Length: 285
Image (cartoon, rainbow, N blue to C red; front, side, top):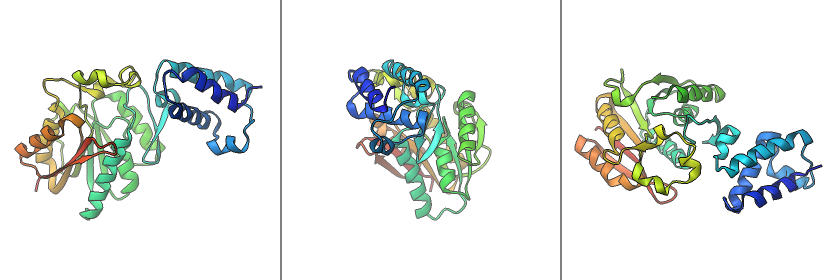
């Protein structure tokens, strides 16, 4: 019989050239929980615990996918965001820790400004991680979400059901949208912002597998989504409403300049946990 300890050693032996030791440990324990509903502590208490023979092949499939540098989240079909479980697939970007910081900032501002029963819209929702996390923490809010991809919206709707949250999803191409139909207290977006010139900086597990539609913008007009969403925000933010963006770390000052030229006030550029310009908050009044 094969033990989990042997499987872990096998993972390290096979993946050590591609990933560092901490990453491999993370892959192993994520797979352990997904396939067997076991945690690290379970193996610490029972180091010689055996893998059911019929399950060994599942571990080999995961290993082969990791050797191709497929993201572990796609391999397992799920990830966690803001302590919530989310389905993911090849039609959605994998939610990032930086986006969790954006959600935390929105919740902080809503509390600080005492915005009651906020109406919120997320533009380019992907997995639905932003609106679902907000709804889970703001039960009295009304939340909408837009995406151009019907496949992504199917995932987002599934995630809303999984997390028992009510979010109103719209299928729209924001670049072709002239009217958001109502006023909002919060407009938030994490739109495509990676320029093609930045491709060489990206890892294979992102570039080879995550949807380019949700990642890339042209080198010539990298702020196209910010321009469009900001123009819509001028029309559809309530008098004390707030606009939040996740941004390209290299274009922080240019994004601030764009919002300033459009007439936004109280523009704040904030760094993420890695010290990179990553988020912007602005208001119309």
